[in-house]
Image (cartoon, rainbow, N blue to C red):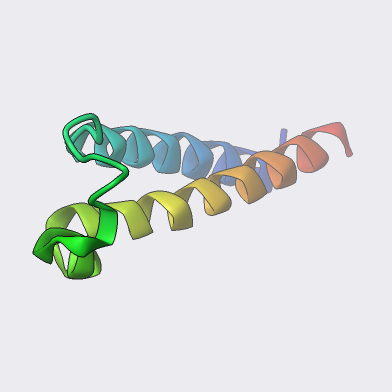
Length: 78
């Protein structure tokens, strides 16, 4: 394996660890009713709370993780 393969592998592992930590920091969604949803103050301002920010980072890092996994696989097979 060349230096590109090693770099992609290390970055993939680091993103995976960070993604796991961010997912574990989020509160569970069991307490929020689907009926009240965005009718509450919390639902209307969810993007400004810590959970909203962590949710956005989760989506972003999961997409980056999938792309890195694909690139790492292609790089190793090549």
